[in-house]
Length: 522
Image (tube, rainbow, N blue to C red; front, side, top):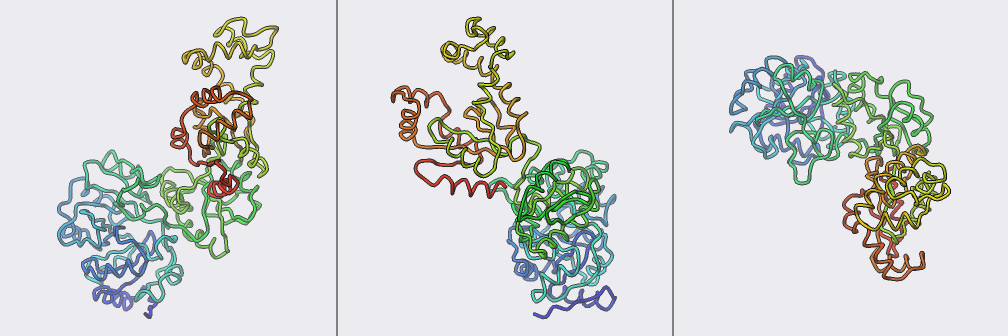
């Protein structure tokens, strides 16, 4: 279809209102992002929004109104807390969810029993709604999944030929979508953060909770109660990877990368191609520029982008929420000492995977080697072992390993005593040696509770018979003794359930499996 490009003149706004009233689609500016509007009371018109965007129909839409009195027909009732928010904020970048009336069709609500509504602060938006004379359902005016449009040029790029008209009203004020709060339950819950912050809301109505899906992915089977809650959203064509760390560690990490871009703050010292989205600590500048800069990365041909994590306070929460969805929740945490924790069952072939990581340039810290070093002659750990297991476990300043093993592994309680002494010391020393990217090679990773220090955990598994054969060859021991060693560890299910990735080593190509894992992690 032909898409008309309109201005904010009275004549063009009147034309936009007529198009909407008759079932057409019009994109218009709001203070948050550009919206793609249709008559909310016309189910066929609303369905055409989903078609134009390529948007899943179970993702609810926000109904936009021009006056406060337009709310009552849309909802069953307006509870006191909702009235307080409406009086305190409207018009504003705030969306409220309440139980819907019979007037609201299921297509608008995404099949839910609730309706989301807001009154835009932007005067052009309100003028368009008034000209239409009907409430307007309007998600962001972009192809579904791509960054939301904050300029008319973004909408023209995405929607030309798909909708009836686009009103060019300049750049949007805030740059991220409205805050969404539901009052349909007993406790107010923020489903999507925006320019109206949690603190601002609590000043008016008291305690407000933050939905778990704001900072993490939706649970399996969970239905989106608000726009923007889907697993991956707001994403450019480039692959986004969030990097959580301070300025110095972010710069060091990103500057070690090749064939990638950085999405960072003004003043970050970055040697690879970069795009900046505002100033560090200035959440409003970050919010205003974020979507524009995500689109710019595509224009520059970026394929992989390392993005700096913003502060999560205030409007920064909204910026982080959009970024983590653009990255499909892929976050490298530089605040953790180890990029990868490598563990696995004895005889599974963890050493082969470790060698492959070293060839790829990773620093690998061998916890077994560290364990031997921390009990060298003169170590204070020896005194603790003597107090726990007898003076004779140390002779002439040297640890009598066979004697210690006999006593420490005689009973479960004695083994736990040994682990309580050794594991914290070993982990502390491993952390001292760590640098990003770093691998902790730890057969007893879970026993030492060291998983909390690792960004991601890879375990290596193999079937029992292969493990027995490998242990017998490696250690020159009998089948029975090999089986005893296997039975002393967690079972395979435990390793799989507590790891992020599994490499199977029953004759499969471990390098290919490792390449796939590293591509996702890094």
